[in-house]
Length: 289
Image 1 (cartoon, rainbow, N blue to C red):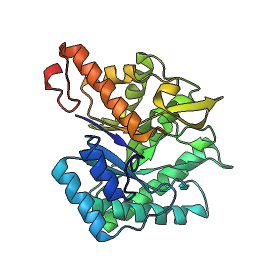
Image 2: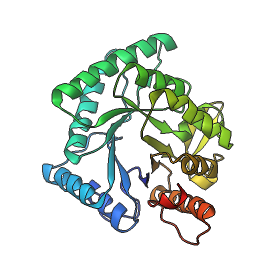
Image 3: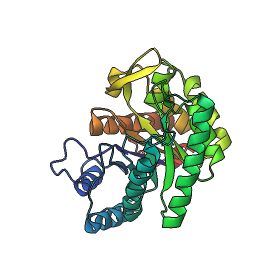
């Protein structure tokens, strides 16, 4: 199964609520996923809006994910309790909307060693997992790979946390991996190595963020439109189609929905290449299995 959608309300959507963004993503863009963003702060959402999102998504087969605020630090001291509050608030809304995951930026090394930071993040992710269970929150905790050297979140680190805390899943931000590796994702084998690294987790579904990225000396500077970045999309599409991976591809490009549709077109181009047909639907993969 391939799902594609934007990270947030599409820029061309006149209405600026998450409800508007969801309807626009389905009815105008004909995409089947969206990541609802609380990244700049906590969003006040009426129960009616959350219920609408849940019902509309279920009736129209749109997969919902939620991104918690950016400023989270599960490795810090004073910040941990505030981070828990932000994540739990986001998770409660995610649960009301029927979201699949709550995406979290894990934290910073600060003055701690990589080893000590790992111990702190594992410990606090376990606490967070207990809070989710106590509150009966269904969406999974999803830890995102990060694009700067001073920030915890290499692919290997995220895999280690997910291995240590049962039920926590990774968010594979390819732009971040590419930047942290100083442009490491260029060929098909580079993308294959990402999936090999994830193999111990035995994932049945991959949540993948896609964007172009400007980087310098292993550090992300900012996002770019996919075509302006130097990370190619075709090798990723080939791996997904060749391995029949169950993926959700979320566009985090500054050209939000434009690049979500571009991802869709590249997937359909890959399907047509395999079937020899002049048309394809990214949701129908039975002909190439």
